[in-house]
Image (cartoon, rainbow over all chains, first blue to last red; front, side, top):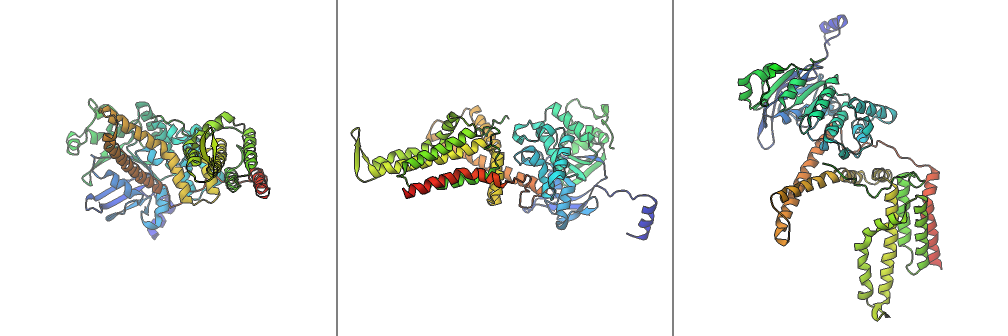
Length: 267
Length: 253
């Protein structure tokens, strides 16, 4: 820490580092297919950002870089100031909570309780503290009464909520959701939206569901052909017909983004 | 996408057998089976005593005999083989209702039938009084290689998911007018099996990804520690130890 920053921090607390800082990220799969060509993306703490883009734009590839599953060919990723690198993987994976698209992939333990306990137990937490954290996470998603059920006896919406609990229990810096609204009926979809809005956590939401993005995320970025093609307030992006058409993004029939406002702004 | 209750073997209860720690019960059943198998087949009375012991356990666990007998039907295909032995094993013969039966064959059949049934009965009792989940914990506690326990636990978790997938594929086949009606259709069924394998394999990859994302580094964290007191071990030991006494008597008499 330099003298200048030390002086400033004594006057006022320094702003927290950005939850997510991606710079110049490029990646090619081993078969030579290049998925990302220099992605720059910063998500400040507490922001909710939608990551939009057509199929094959590299969205999943980008997500898998956030917790070090894939190693960048060039560029870097940092979570709350900590670079994603081999030596920090355990901490990075605690900070980045990814909710995958199919809850049957995410929930692999015999009961809901054990599944939610998996992450913290892998981090070495045991006994009453573990039980307390599992209970708190299940309460947050409203699934506490299902703790002893096997995941496959739950409805799809309930499984998705448990999947969110499995990462919330790690107290992540950033919650990454892959197509959170897919396969949900309208009521489950709304319940999940309520849940996500109630959380005080940074969210990056990968989705094709543009109304959902508008409802939950004040800011959106468009990833297209391996680069960030647009970045701005969600209503503006969705109202820009030319931009949308250029990146194969389409609103549902009859939906006008100018006629609705986001339910709430970021905390 | 409803999933039926896959654990039909288990009968919930709170008897003293139900509440024993799973690893005690597992160890007891294993020892019991080893003792039964090492009993001389000519000591017919010993097997009657073993059966009485199991009946005693069933009574304590309040497991109805009709339930036990129904679950024991699983062994039928395996012991069917035993019924062939009197006809195929060479040796001195006796005639029963005019049918020649080999004496050593009869003994072999008795041996397989008696030991097999006792083993199955003990296992059915174990399954009836222990949840699948705690059986896994018990195995873990008995220091079975963790990899085997993990495989078993994933089998339980994903059995229904894969059965579901299989059912959907079958519905899709039939919706397009396909009914498997003979050898000519085996090719299609084989391709379905292949597709199912690939789907399951890919699911395996996705599950692994999800596990790694949540901090998996090769070992499942032990979340519930099952511990057993001396008294519980002694209680569980009653079955195999009594059986051992019977077995020794069988060898001596």
